[in-house]
Picture (cartoon, rainbow, N blue to C red):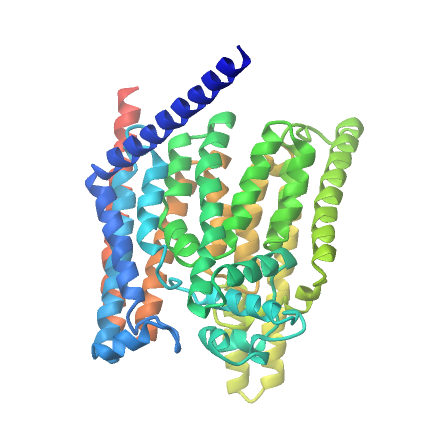
Length: 503
């Protein structure tokens, strides 16, 4: 009798998984029937093709040999590769806009994320060479060297040659769990420099998978716009290009943060707090998630003594548990906390960080007038001002909006942190952007977020054109993308007006 029941249970599980797999296949097939999905797939394929040309390959990439054999080691090949990339970005943006009305209601979001990611899986890192630096830091560990004490250049060779020249001479800025992850992926790739960099996509895909699975579920649980969450947070071209294509560890950090928020909503406070510490060991900004984890189930309703004392107790517990997990992992790794001394490394390159740009401008003016010391002081002063305003802004959010809307606190704090920091890369904006639909934004805020995302994508494509002396292509792509943005806003406005008229 027991054997019969066990056999029946095994058969039931097998039937269940067969039905699930059949359902997943059906979802993918249905998504593929949408022309916009196929155009987005083509856009990703063009990004893959463009990434294999001299427009983007690092000096010692294994792709150089076939490129040279085909006579493609020249400016024309660079221009062609740049054109492919610009066209790929434009196609992804157009497909993203077109899918907005039907996504989630008619076609599921996750098959689109999957399909648009597929062409990028084996491509060289897109729009950023950070994954090559990840691999080189993993290679240091493989050779028994601590990346907090040794720059990549200590081990000259193919791993170091792939990394951007600046990162070769700086120590690691990432927490220990990230470095151990890089080490494991280098081993998994058989110590091959190129495939080690490509392998950095594995944790990035895991992070994007967590985002795609849990963000719409959180939106449904809190009464936010699930369709907006699925559209903006999971099929956003910035997520596809920067997190999947760029293989940044920000993807896994945010995936773990989103999972921690989900656990907090399910009443798993302690596990959520521990997970925040784990996420911070992937990338440090995750530690801010201790705040919503503490208050999601128990909002800080007023400044009365009872409410305030309870809120501060939970905030203290959440922070201590998250920090303890972070410290425990750091100590267990044996690597220590040397990332602290490299905290200024991201600011050594020119980015879109507003305060760094202002400081750099002042530095240039003062240096031109023969005052280089004052110029350096002005740059440092503007950066410190940005960090001070960031701290003040986050503190103000914590005491006002965040008390009752803790996820709104986290989203806006990440955005403030990104804009107020010493460096601003496009993937930094995914931190707060992924969570933005959960804040129940107004139409104006949502429209601004879409505009900023689109302009950043156009900037990335244009920046590549600038570096490849193909500026005209960049301007052409920028014009096309901005026209699409204008049309999208006009169509969205007409749709909202029609909705109001029908009520």
